[in-house]
Image (tube, rainbow over all chains, first blue to last red):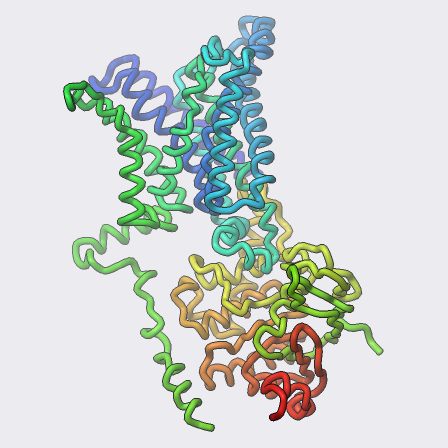
Length: 382
Length: 256
């Protein structure tokens, strides 16, 4: 427990310090390029998508349950936490004496985030249980349906602003870096901890072979539902932060596009690789923003913004990944200092040699397979 | 007479109109090494699937240490102490040999998932225990050298050994081996015979095995059960089975 608290403390201090530094840099205009817009587009949003990608990686990559419903969990977290803040917490905050406002805001935001996480986790449980009977494409369709149902629901619920969007949410997140970074770190830490432990192997065994996993005493039901619940929880928390930073959320923010983009990130990064999801999550989101910076093009007499084609670009990325590197950028591996060092030390001399683990061949270490010849002998014997 | 470790009572398994196993009764006693043989399609693997909970028997009861297994999920049955291997090798292909066996050892875990998520000391301690247990079985099966190799990269014979190691890591009282010698050359299956016998003698595991290689079955099994069209047609020591006219007929057809 002591160690966990220590790590939490370290993470909080680091995030807080970076938050202050960034605030000073953005508002003090230290660098010409670091404006409020670039900060949001190239730091904040990528952080949010890192959380989404890493949490989906737990479901899609590590446990192998292809889910297209991540935007649904994201939406549930955003809307329900916002509902709590607007309809309850704001009123409570008004009764707090001015001196305690800061602390109360902090506490209420934490509560809202936990409510968002809890609600999304509950939905993860609800989605997880019926989808136990579904595999592959069918699971993808069912989760896609779930995501759309959630969005349409919020689009039609007047208490959540329906199509006009849910506005007037208290912006307690403020500048945002602190919370966004803390959530991303928490999500990465939990994923890494799980993957490092033998429990993580249980998740992987479900992906590899469900029948064999059951035969080895792994309750596949438990681990599948757990993956959905944990993944949904982090997506819900991400939604809660988004709502409390932007102050308003709209059903279009949670369209199927989001689910597909996050799936693209997981596939591109390598299913099961946490660092892969982090890199692809941040990278793709930045790529999307870079598209916005391109000049308007005129095609067939009409003007197009290159970012209008972003879904096309994602599709292209997905297709190219499937063709040239189906295991994703990092495959099942993780990017660590050790692998980096190995790549760096190896690249100048023998860049063409595949990584050590794949060069192992049966022939090199074991007596040559004799089964064919001996079978032949066997045939002759009688 | 002592109570059997595993007892099938009038077990019938029907798939629509097909009766794969027909009111089968059999017993396996603790410490035995029993062979289950029969022509192709006799229902041998179905018997294994019924015992391990992959199928729920249409009729009848299965008792393990006096406890009924009917209706339990496969992972619950594994936890009770029955492990198995598969006819068409089902390793976790993307994982290393050690990881495969660690998953087998994981069946006896005590820590909770949320503790693992927060990396509690208890989880780290348990992980190293489980790894030590997995390495122990790798050593017993002479697989230590390939511990960090991906399972899918191993040659066939070794993959079969990894499957046995993985099953043993669940610390079973009874292990069901589904054609362990399939696809092995005579040298390899000879080696396997010694290994299987050693597992029983040294580690006290009761073994029920399906096998087509008669040299293996007749060489190591003390008792052989013969299945044909889902029915038990003969039972007894290998020598008696070898000369049983019903068995010969099942395999070769009626005498002309």
